[in-house]
Image (cartoon, rainbow, N blue to C red):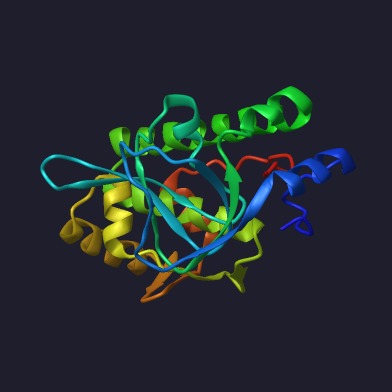
Amino acid sequence: MRALSSFREFKPPELDFVQQFKMGELVVDAGATIFLEGSDSPHIYTLLEGWALRYRMLESGRRQVLNFALPGDLIGLQSVLFDKMLHSVQALTPVRLCVFSRQRLWELYERHSGLAYDLTWIASREESILAEHLTYVGQRNALARLAYIIMHVMERCRKLGLVVNDTLATPITQQDLGDAMGLSIVHTNKTLRRLTATGAIEWRRGGIVVRNAAELTRLADYEKRETQPRPFI
């Protein structure tokens, strides 16, 4: 990931600290729970490979998908600041995680102000993503919601080199999209067919193809934001 232009470079002292901060790596199977809402964990993780899902379960059994976790994303910071997780994280594919000790996180704040700023940036970025998701769920129609969430995922994956010829291999299902945008599976299926009929995308099992990016952007009323290389720990 350090070779990707979408991530900022570590300064030598920062890189040395992070390499010492790292406890090891953990491989988790698809479908496994990485964090459970309400739980406490001695570890936090950076996702190195694979896809994961942040979500909350309601008492009714319904699920609200908060966001998709991709390589470079930090998982578990909530358990450090609030003593427990306020949402769950599930692996959508086999994932490889970089493991850090939660107890040693304060050393990062004490010794490396640049990395401390990075953690603030990461938390603020997650907040901005949630704010945008909420705006679409609350104020956009179903077609715009699905166009938006597909654009959002495609843009994030493009920066990671996961999009090839406007095609993204993804484990995301129609149920995941619906749960992210507040739509039933039936409504999601019908809306995806409408979106496909516009010629903007092609929905495949295990993949998404963008056929007309301009039309997809128009339908989503999506504003692309130029961002600086982002940090990761």
